[in-house]
Length: 325
Ligand SMILES: Nc1ncnc2c1ncn2[C@@H]1O[C@H](COP(=O)(O)OP(=O)(O)OP(=O)(O)O)[C@@H](O)[C@H]1O
Image (cartoon, rainbow, N blue to C red; front, side, top):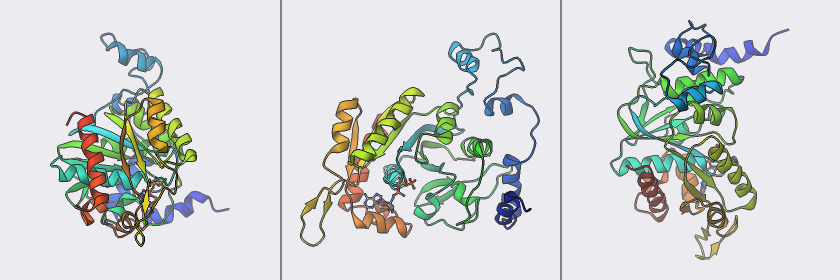
């Protein structure tokens, strides 16, 4: 019987050799036991798992609980996770437009697509089919689009081929994406998280010093219920909630100019008030936002002076202020 792994290896074998070597290194190759490997794997600094003397108290507490040490991303000053517990509410669209709006305001910005199973950033930036190079230290060099530095698992696996990885492989891939990308000096790195509150979110919140999280939701009750779970998740893992973005709010008919609140009116605003979370802004439901995304030219660069881009820019300003930039 042919094992499923050999089928999923076919697209892998079609990759150019530097990328194959890179994926092989972080997914399959055995690693020598070292402090950094041990930390990245969530282990302790010595075989007994005891903190060394002189270890800071909060780090000692983390180590006792078996949590990895939180590390900064080299060259990156602030890291913000854009998250939604529910899929399809526009998280990637918001993440990319916020990143581009921040870059247009003179903030050195990058975007890291951490959605291993369904990366959207290569499409949103019209970078599909391009492959990142490796620097002399075997670190991935980010690609650039519209002045934005970008890295995504989508650059490393063939388009349209599913990633079939188990938890440990996902965790290893995440650690490489988080810590082995050769970012230039960045003021702000936006992380586009996958939907939900699972493995990837846990790995990120436990291994990374995050400046905070932005929660995306539509005004619909169903989405807001999941948004509440997302907020509770970040509170539990002690990541500050910078605020919520209400996406797909009012739709203004392009024919008659009438306003329709397709997913309800001000649901996110009320949720923010009840949970003591800041509402960072409101993005309307508009066909151009969708069409711009599909052609790989997000609204903030496609029509920077239009009202939709202005809405994104306003949210980006709030975000930049909230992380002290
Ligand atoms: N404000 C908006 N107006 C119109 N279309 C939008 C808007 N926001 C997002 N979309 C569209 O909605 C769809 C889902 O958006 P997106 O992929 O950003 O969601 P997501 O939450 O990242 O999804 P996933 O759960 O798959 O990661 C896309 O087709 C996108 O172009």
